[in-house]
Amino acid sequence: QSIGCDDYLGSDKVIDKCGICGGDNTACKVVSGVFKHTLTNLGYHKIVEIPEGATKINITEMSKSNNYLALRSRSGRSIINGNWAIDRPGRYEGGGTMFTYKRPNEISSTAGESFLADGPTNEVLDVYMIHQQPNPGIHYEYIIPGDNVISPQLLAHRRPGEPLNGQLGMPESPNHEEEDLHGETDTLTGQSAGTFPVIQPGRFPSHQPENQVPAVQPPRQNREHNWKQIGKTECTTTCGKGSQYPVFHCVNRITHEEVPESYCDSSTKPIPEEEACNLFPCPAFWDIGEWSECSKTCGLGMQHRQILCRQMYANRTLTVQQYRCHHLEKPETTSTCQLKICSEWQIRTEWTSCSVPCGVGQRTRDVKCVSNLGDIVDDEECNMKLRPNDIENCDMGPCAKSWFLTEWSDRCSAECGDGIRTRSVVCMTNHVSSLPLEGCGNNRPSETTPCNNGPCAGKVEWFAGGWTQCSTECGSGTQQREVICVRKTEGNFDVLNPYECSYLEKPPSQQSCYLKPCGSKWFHTEWSTCSKSCEGGFRVREVRCLSDDMTPSTQCDLQLKPEEKEPCNTQDCIPEIDENCKDKYYNCNVVVQARLCVYTYYKTACCASCTRVANRQPGFLGRR
Image (cartoon, rainbow, N blue to C red; front, side, top):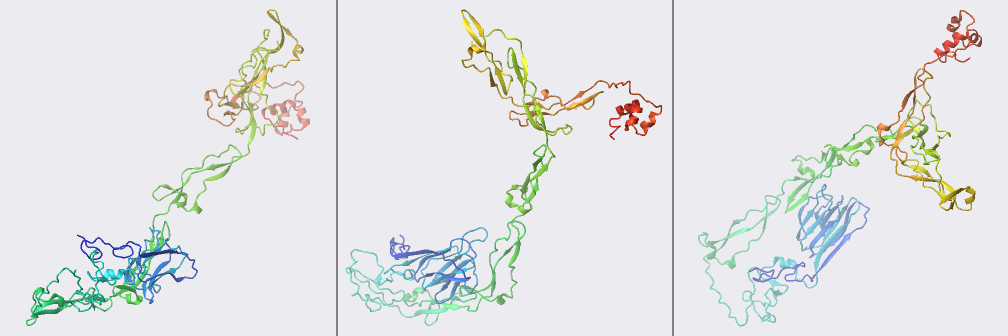
């Protein structure tokens, strides 16, 4: 069977959150809140007061900051982080309980500092914040008992059967609830049990029911043996004030030889009392704090840590002057650090071609931020100030324009009679620099040309014939039909003059048509002037593949591409013979050599020689 918190076998009582044995959590009060005040001065600022008797104490910083929590007693004794000295995380005794001081890892955690203690406290404690940066908020919570509540400290130190707030801790029984204990006499002390004086350890008043005969006291043993101190326990510490207890054994009064403890009266055995030992202070030591975060997220940075000279005394660690640690080598307070190698910019491609064939456009290239492992990472990982340009302007020179047009459609708009054929005409920039074109101008080439497929047979009233086929196989074209004024007779129709039907609405004789998108097709400019007037020259034109919306395309059939260059003026050069153009002097070759043909007199006097040279060398005569 289990033992309850009332120290009785078989009891199911437990201590509730208020610290009450067998309580129902209603005899205490939860005190909590958040300290959010804005502080301006650096240093210690009081946050909250923890009263005597408080349990389940929790003081927690709501997020990580450069501030520190501090704790001291009302008497002014520092418990944690006092006198501008920051203690390491750990367990610290104060106010009759043990506080756990936590400071999460500075690099990996975002949680703040905290004090935790189970309590209860035996004095008033003050919580402070060492203010260094804006207050993120301090959450505090503790439990205090209500009125007429059994003290948790009394529960913690009570012996089995010891009085509890003026009542014996007896199991509840309906037969004994109203028994009067005031008249019962303690057989060991001779005092009234109803007043409950201070009872010596090991001697408890006994309660017997009325119908039970008291047990016979055993006979007192003789005093041939007694208890003797033969030494002390080992000191709990080697320095800094420890504790030890005397050791008592049963010995023969005469020979002082040790005998079994059963030979002595156990009720007379002295209670070992704690004694202080090894009071001299422990050697000072360097208390090394945790490293701070690296000052840089990549590349070489710095990190710092706090080094304090501390000494142990009476189970407490105290901060002392640094000269006491001079016998030890002081650890470094700063160190270099490198979380990772910084990423760098890399140019992954060459510049693209300019976005326009002429005029001012742009060109681009691929620039990426690459880690030291070769992976492409976000641009923020690299220094944006050092990023190479990935776009720049480019100037392809001035643009020239000319008319671009398709071939004539193969179909005539009329099956018979007069009709038209069409072609597409568009003004665009050309890319052939040898063409002497600077602009399209107002001389737009015609988009239609007449056609006639022969006379039409007689048609039939205002009477409209069938529409002709579309003038183009694709894209926009026109359709035509014959509209005549006729008169119906028996079995025949007589054609009348149109004015005979003028009072009627005449049907349209022409309409636009669109069979299907043309897709991409070839457009070209007019041929340039032939480079020579005889003996074979050449002429050029520019050819482009354009889609329906007149934008450049690559979908045209290359086998149908019109020629961009062709020969011209292949006939032989035949000089014109002028019977009146003759040399009047025998030495006209001297006139030619002296370049005197530019003068009118010599040009006439030596006409044949000057003309012959001019035909061989265009521009020889020059201008005067």
